[in-house]
Image: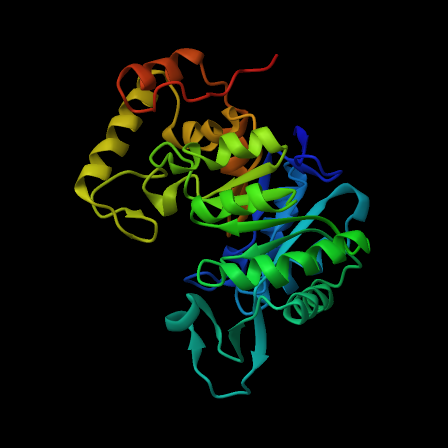
Length: 331
């Protein structure tokens, strides 16, 4: 699997990345054995970039991911986690985290927003302990939507210090909006942006400012949410878009996308997975997977050859914006 340099940094990422939210029991339980098999299958499939966060399962995702990665050659994979939410113990008897955080885990901790310098350093130390590794390759400011000033004035400079100390290899911001990350790219020296759901076959908001700006400034972009939480994996009435029921007009558009893809002999999942990589700023596409089967499917979709005529057809039918960069098959 191709490895790409992440912007101006010395960090490399595989073109397909393993998103570890699901093995933190996102929405439904995953057993330890299932989580372990998903991670080892990702490794066997050639994935070498793994992303997690304290938020995912109140630390469960980090612990499960670390338990596998510790047995693999440290120089051969890239690991990212996130800062902005500290986990504070609440003790037993707190119910579960489904309603509050969306994870099927006991509510033994509560999340506290903290983008202070102290909070960032403590979050990294806590993550290193849960992961059981000696360094983190990429740290993202996680969802600072309502904390922009503190993230810019306190959290970002602390990440810079940690990068200078060698604790981190690269720093960035991870969000499901494109506007605030563009401000970070303009006003700071971030290496990377993790953009979720805002550059897909259905949602092109990342193309307005963020992606061209990132390409201009040498900032690497990792794209998540390429299936927009389900609609582009299996378009049908009742499917979800951004974790809520998709409106009828979006369902119709997704079905149109599917029909064009299938007329070229290409599953919609494959086109959705490959589309973001056409932009020169995009270094990796991150897919959240909870099972070995889902990992194998994503890797298989990535390997499929997609004819240039498919992208041209989508553009001619107005299903892609004019002039959008599309993937070019290599050798």
